[in-house]
Length: 368
Image 1 (cartoon, one colour):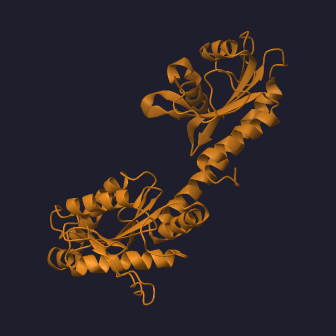
Image 2 (tube, one colour):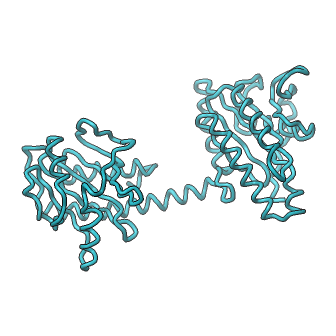
Image 3 (cartoon, one colour):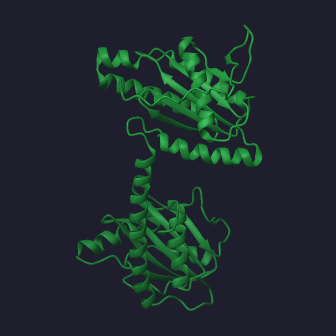
């Protein structure tokens, strides 16, 4: 679990390790969604039967079909005990092995019969002092049924799984803090740098189109100076939400706040014209924001004639140059690097993209 890169990988590793440790043919990890009153399966591993997927999108069961997760566990704890795994068999004779719930339903027995399994061991997963879900391991019909020792072992494995999930949560929170702008909830410069480097590797390998939109929110200094930084922060948040909405029009796009009043949108895959269309829509909507004065947008895309793009720095410089042109012209539309356009063009163009004297990227300003 510690080597996994995502929560799904972590849970998959835990389920597979538990299946092997308990000599089972199948294992699953489910979580108890209290607000929906259901057990939702997060991962299935091993021999999957009809209707079972490794990473199911919506495999869930009403908790009232398996009341022990909601009732027995808490009643048992209230009496001063500890959560413990129990065994079920397709014949319904395993109840009582490993502190089985005396008032449990026959839902698991029916499920075992329906899927040709002979027995299962169910261990509550407790996270942060609460019943989080369960670890479920099954054996096929004809194999020896689980016994009390298996239930004891499953209890330990569920505890280890819970510790792994807690560690995964902490790592996810650390990643979120490392790659997220705290004010807007968008990505930060670090997230953009990593994603852009990956995107350019794909571009160099197979020609994937990479487009960068750099935005400078106009009027923030005036808002901060006249109405206060709290109002300025709200303007930044509102524009961040608007950027997120527009970014969703491009599959897989990353939207981020680079710092101060600077934002960006990184598109990987969509044609340059599609990115320009979305940026044009962003400019139109930003002009309607209360208190703000619109946004200056510059675009640089490998889908346009901008010359070689050996590095992320080159693409940033081109997008920056286009954004400066848009800001200087007080343009209500984006400026696009590498395109020559006429008077009737819907988007102002930046024709000169010669790398001979590219403008240095400015340092990001602090909150103004």
